[in-house]
Length: 113
Length: 232
Image (cartoon, rainbow over all chains, first blue to last red):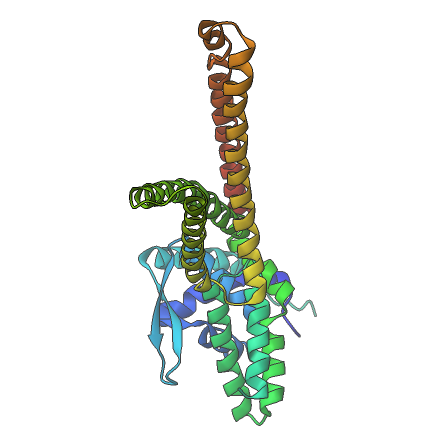
C-alpha cells in the first residue's frame, strides 16, 4: 500500500532532518535511505527532495558544501545546523503526539465474550 | 559523444531552459540522475533503461518546476529584472563614454589636420569600433551565462528591453531639450518669460510621485513574496 501524497509531503521535513542527524548526506543517498527504511513503500518523486532541502537551507536549518564522493563525482552534501537540531526535536514531539493519539484510538478493544 | 550522453545533454538543456530552476539546481539533479543510473545498471538494467527509469523517478520538467517554484517563487522575475537593469545600465554608461571617446578622438584627428568628410568618416570609424568593442565584451560576459539556447532567449530578451527603454529615454530627453531650445525659447518674447514657463515645479512633483509609486510597488511586492514563503 503506497503512502498518500499529503503524508509524504508532510513527513518530508522530519525525515530529511532525521537522516541528516545521523550524519552529512547528499540528495541521492537521502532518497535511497527513505526507500530502504520504508521497504520501498514511501516512493518520493526524487525531484521533490531538492526544493525541500533548499528550503531548509534558506531557513538556516541545514547548510551545504561541495565534496567529491568515492565515485569521483562532485556532490552537494547537506549538514544539519544547530537550529536544525532544534527544529527536529520540535517535529519529533509533534509527530509523537499524533502517533500516541492515534495509537490510543486504535488499541485493541477488550473482548466482551 | 555517445547517444546516451546526447540524451542526458538534451534533458539538462530542457531543465536549464526553465526560469524556475537555477544552474546549480540542474547540476544537482544531473548528479542525482547519474547516480541513480549507475545504481540501476548494477541491478541489471541497460544504459537506456536506466536513463528512462532515472528520468521518470526525478519527475518531469513541469513537476520539478512546480516543486522548485515553492522555494523561489519570484526567482524568474528577479532574474529578468537583473538582466533588464544590466541592459539599461550598459546603455547609460556606454553611451556617454562613447560620446566622449568620439569627441576626444575627433579633436586629436583635427589637430593632426583631418577636416570635413575625412573627419566625419574618422568619427564614424571610432564610433563603430567602440561599439564593436563594447559588444564583444558584453557577449563575452553573457557567454558565461548561456548554457543553452532557451537560456539565451531568457537573458537576451530582458537585456534588449532594458537597452531599448534606456535608448527611448535618451531620445525623449533629447526631444524635451530640443523643444525647449527651439520651440519654447523662441515662442516667448524674453528669457525671463521662458524661465517662468520652464520652471521645474511640475517635474519635481512628477519625480516625487514616481518615487512614491515605486516605494508602494516595492512594499506590495515584498509583502506578497513574504506571504508566499509563509504559505509553504
